[in-house]
Image 1 (tube, rainbow, N blue to C red):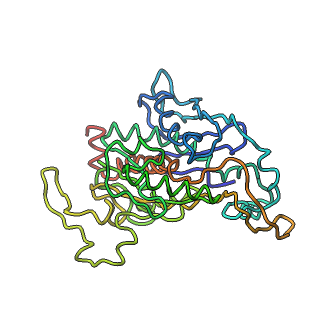
Image 2 (cartoon, helix red, strand yellow):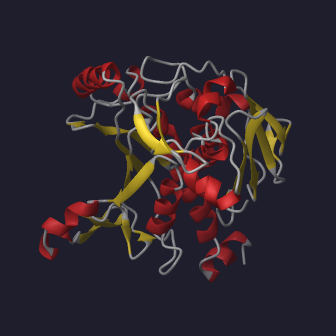
Image 3 (cartoon, rainbow, N blue to C red):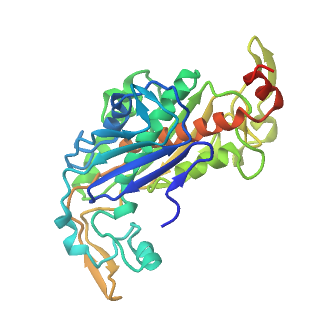
Length: 364
């Protein structure tokens, strides 16, 4: 199976299945000398673990991370960092009734056609639990970025048609939906409760803001920074769309409005507006980088649905077991992690973009 590795200078490879013994990640190319312990990673994993509210699956996983390699005496060594989280609460029997049936909205059918077999227990590699490795790697990258003065902050911007109207600092971590707006969070919870009564699910939007990234990150052609961010986010199973800056809103504006005019500030070149979302021509422009991911409703719902099985028979199914009525709140930290990995990779690549950078490093 190809395609489990992401990144250029920093390579992140996730491994494991939803109902296997464990999941994890190997991070290659990470520099030596970053102070690191399991708690630095655990705080991120705790944000995505299940069972934290009635709006998440009841699967009781502690998601405790173990550092297997790449850290010695509390610091990264420059060798591959290997991390593992053991599965502790698999209920594989919950999937017995659909072992040969393709669930609507899932990867089952495509996976079966590609490989001729599939792990039906929660989707195997296609499961949302695969994101454990991403979040663990993202936590390490985010810590390095923070030491460079770069902050990566994601939050739930919208659930259904309920949007965040007022950004309240600190509120994101005070409600189960990760919305930085208490009023919007209350309305969204009522909306989700109605969905749950109807045995249905909901989707939403996660926005990530990257503050402090320098100008010059990214490449001008195929390795554009916005292209890499889009790849990183669309690789998350539930994501169906990505916007940078004004995104699809640019189609209803004009060039005179959409163009961000430059001026000279005390810190150098700055912009009056940020319609570009901090990226122009695939290269960061020094402003806040703003990216949004559209996340589809959870496909596992308890309503009766029509589908087919491996014998090409048309059947009806009702999906039982423990599933999130919405994945958006738990996806917030996944989006944050993938953005951190992407920006960290770009920062390391940028160090060799210019001869004067190399001379400065070697003090020539």
